[in-house]
Length: 470
Picture 1 (cartoon, rainbow, N blue to C red):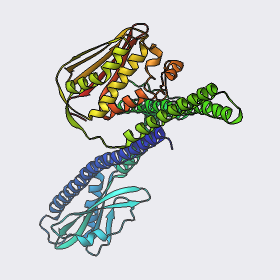
Picture 2: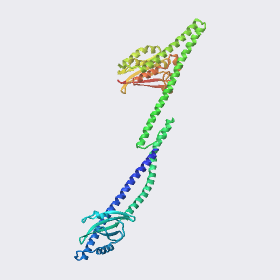
Picture 3: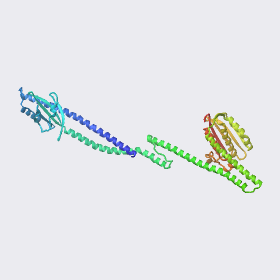
Picture 4: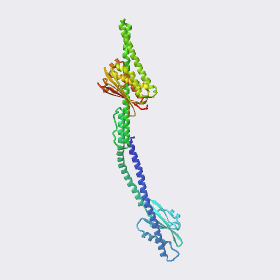
């Protein structure tokens, strides 16, 4: 069952129970109030009749000790004539419960008479085919004889009025149910409309439309649910995009790895087959052997780089407190002679700072970045290293005056086997793993590595290492 129907039926059932019970209690309470007043009136009426009867007997007897029953009957007839309206009837019986007089033929029994005494007045509710009555009874003592005086008050209209009120209320309740049912249904649709919107968007997302979002501007629980749903979808879309990007990168990695293996292996197999199958001159044999050695060395370097990446990802780093300025001065000492030989000016400007690092890995990063800068420079150029404290850590800027990197390539230069200029990189012995290793090392230090480059002007690499944190 839909949630809107659940809201609808729940509202109708709750309203039906509430109005039914409330209406019943209201009508019953009003009836009981009028009913009690009728009983009090019946008792008071019976008391008045009793008093009038006693007065009449006193006047007629004139001090006589004996009153005949025919006198009692005559007085009863007079009393019956003096009672206004047809709502009240009287009946007089002797001590043996034999009827002496009744103003109207009634078939009611005398059970009440046996329950009263000289000082009490009793009543009961009677019902016959004509309606409802209040039977009220008391005792008259006449000439030491006991007589019973009964009055019957017709309260049929009271019960008919109650029945009429119930019938009217049933009709009102029926109309209320229809009107409130329609209102409840519209309200349930209004309440569930945003939920249906969330459901429709979720269905579209499950079919692959990850760009879909719920458009609900309310500030209630449904609005907050929509906001949380959108945030979840944003996170899901980002995760899926990341997974797709990782998948593409893995595919590129496999393709690049296969290509990097295929090229040197093809050369090695080809030249080895020439040496094996043909009689070559000494010069040709040396040249072929040189190609085999060169490509074999490239395969070895590639294997070592891959092994270094795998080992580095799995091993634990032993961090030490290191003076960054002294570490970079050591790197300068290692790289300076090579750069001078290549006609590259090398400048170093460093501030002192002590960080928690793995010194050999950080050296590897700096040397790789300087080497990339050297390869990007054709002829005379400059490489500058600046180090300074900033933003709660230490920043290292490595700037070269090389040919730069196209903007569209910047996001992929840390991918394994990715090379901006593949032919040039292979000529210089590269395999496209250096920056991937650097990125992994910086990631292990919880630092950042960012590239800013302009084609034809050079590249700046920014390394940020947190102060004393891993």
